[in-house]
Length: 151
Image 1 (tube, rainbow, N blue to C red):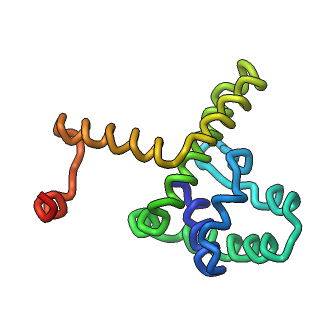
Image 2 (cartoon, one colour; image 1 turned 120 degrees about the vertical axis):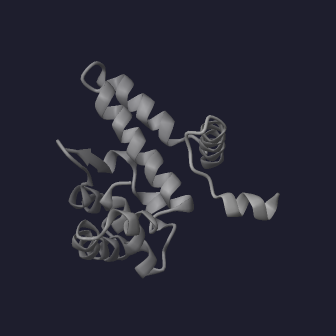
Image 3 (cartoon, rainbow, N blue to C red; image 1 turned 120 degrees about the horizontal axis):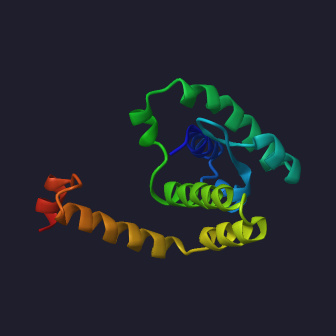
């Protein structure tokens, strides 16, 4: 998960509007450079000129240096569950766009938009199935105590 997703999560939590980013941060808002994924918060903010967006923008900016200076393991525990699924889906949609764009920009936008509209439940099911297969193949670590407690 890119640090910008952690900052998004923390900003929304501080504002007590945890679902706000899911409804407003789209795949088009993510940009890539040579090494990292970023969110273009300035471009995003210009499109949504209201009090909540302004507050979100300020909180996001305040958390960026904190997450950039924090341990990845700690930050990985910040953005999880619903927010993580949505942010990963948006980031992957942006990846699809940037990979396909040099060949066909119209197709790239179509594919990215379609992927970003897949229902969260369908994504969760597919990821769970892939994880179960990895466990069967001995390639994934699973929470043994949890499995034993529900078995």
